[in-house]
Image (cartoon, rainbow, N blue to C red; front, side):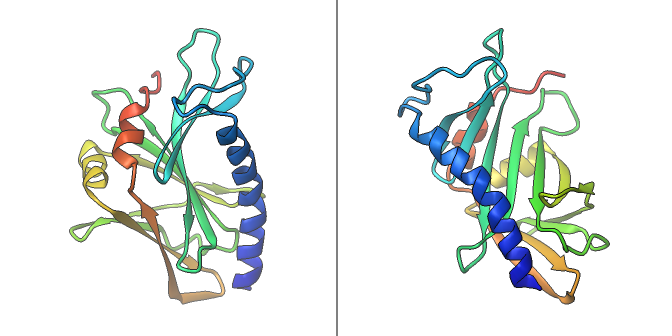
Length: 188
C-alpha cells in the first residue's frame, strides 16, 4: 500500500521535477532565463542550495515568485513538495506555504512540522485532488526566523493503512535564508 502511494507520488512529482530541471538548465547562473518567458509563463529565477525560486512572468515586470523544495525520505524517495511565499509586512503571517503529500494520507491526523526542538505545530489538510492532499500554512515571523537558523525541519504524516506508524521526513533548510530573502512580497 505504501509502495503504491510512493509510486503515485513519485510519478506526479517527477513530472514537476523534470519541468523544473529543464527550466533550471535554461537559466543563467545569475538567475536570468536565457529565453525570457511569455507573460503568464513560469520560469526558474534562481537556486539556493536545496531551494529553487520559481516565478511567473508578468506584464509589469513584478513577477510573483515562490520558493520550492521536493522533500525526500531517508531512501531518497519523494514524500512531499513545499512551496513557500513571502507575505506583505504587517500581516499576522510573514509567509504562506503549501505542502502536498500523497493520497491515502490519514486526513484526520494533522500534518506536523517540527521547526526546532522547542517548536512543533500541527496543521489540518485543506483538500485533496489527483496530485495529492494539500496543507495550507501561515507562518509567523518567529517561525520564519527559526527556519532561517536551522538545518532541517521535521515533517510527520500518517498513512491511512498504518496510522500507528508515523512517517517522518525532513525539509532541508540549506539555502532557505537566501531564497526567502530573494522573494518579493505577494501583493495583498
